[in-house]
Amino acid sequence: MPSLYLQGKGAIYHLGQKAFPYGDKAFVAGGKTALSVAGERVKKSLTSNGIEIVGWDDTVKECTHAVINKLVEECRHNKAHFIIGVGGGRAIDAAKAAAWKAKVPAITVGTQCATNADASGESVVYTDDHRFLEVLLLPRNPMLVIEDTEIISKAPPKFLVWGMGDALSCKFESEAYAKARHKRGDGEVPTSVALALGDQCYRSLLAHGQKAVNDAKNGILSLDVVDVIEAVKLSSALTFENSGCALAHALHNGLSRTGQVKGEHGEIVAYTTLVQMAYERRPKEEIRAVVKWCASVGLPTKLANLGTPSRSALRQAAEHACEHDPNGRNMPDKLKVPDVLDAIARVESEF
Ligand SMILES: [Zn+2]
Image (cartoon, rainbow, N blue to C red):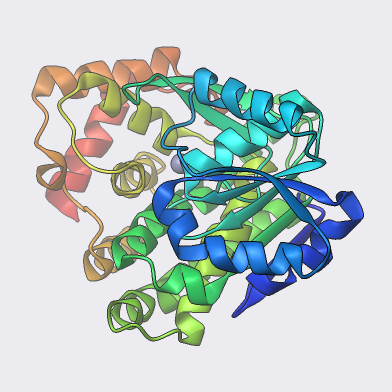
């Protein structure tokens, strides 16, 4: 977990005061949009606390090895004491990886809610054309995570929806992961805190998600919006980091590889979470409640929402999930392709 997580309206103004223990030379990295939204507030908070901004890069669009290395060079050249990543998942992941390579602390400032990368201790690296390359497991999480609810609530509401879709999976995947580890007795059983947070995340999404999306559309920073930001940014991040992904992410990865599925990460994961629930033969009422919730917030509940992949593409995706994807091995029993295809068919026809 991060050393300090600060969430609230105007939280960004605490950045300088909370970052000061790590030095007085900051390197700020993010995308153009994020820094045009939050940049002035970042500057104000740092300089008013005696922190010099020795580097400023607003060109981070993707988390590639080239981008990470460029940030490392800039950080070293300017002798920065820490790196502040500002923005969405790609900028945050690039900044965290660069901080690790430059051996300085990472600080993250979220500007939208599509990702739970801000508090996590890993970076997902892509190629220049945004194909998945690898996950870098960093030796530690950011020292400081700032989530200014006012800034995040003003980002386009679709980000909130995508973030919720991804966060929805964490309860079900962490529970599957825990069952698998108990069964194998391999010592990597997740803490009860991780499981409790996954459950809390799920309850929060179902209780507040729909109102949060409506409020965000109307520009209202309600307690529902705040609860959902916490569920995505804190609860889901700490859950997945302290347990693991399972069928939902394995099948997401399989579907993405077919090239026949369209949709954002969180949209596909919401659907594959339904498939995992059907696969586990969870009670129908439980699955129906999640289907209803997904529909109410604008997340996919049927394959048709994701581009209707062919039967052979579905088989390929299921084979990837069962045979090749490491997340698939986090299910309590060995995944079988016919069972995964059957779960997909039941999500299509029964719910
Ligand atoms: Zn995810």
